[in-house]
Image 1 (cartoon, helix red, strand yellow):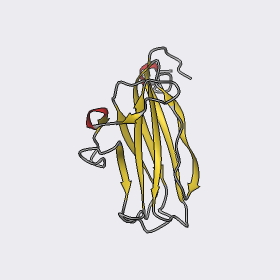
Image 2: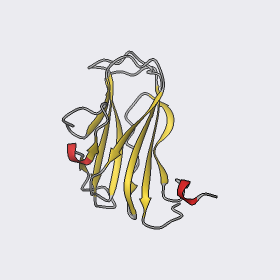
Image 3: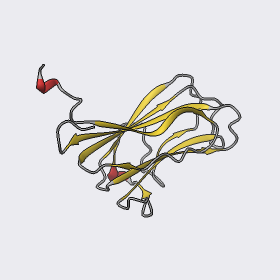
Image 4: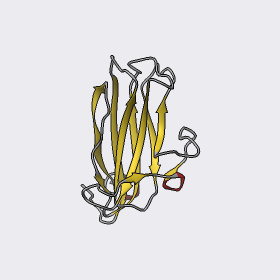
Length: 151
């Protein structure tokens, strides 16, 4: 084994939105970042189930806070996200991705979270009618674990 090549011991992926084909809002789960110094949010988005537009869209919103019950969650801002060319500038209401145009192929899009809060939550917000579902899954990969052998 070559320890310097190990990228597994210091990360811990958490399913924030369970993989599925969705036609309505997905609230996501609250992910605890305690004992981790970094987080990457992976949006796995399949082929669009509808013809996306400004009226018929899916927005991915990231919220963060410090309360275990999520009572203080607030939208992330520009300073909380690493920009990758896909995120809107500036970020409004925590929306880091918007599906507003045709999506003919599945892909995985990554968003770097660098905010200082303990909890993050990703919401898939569906606008307009979605009679045919779109495959979606969201993973939060917690990284730079304080302790090696992160679960």
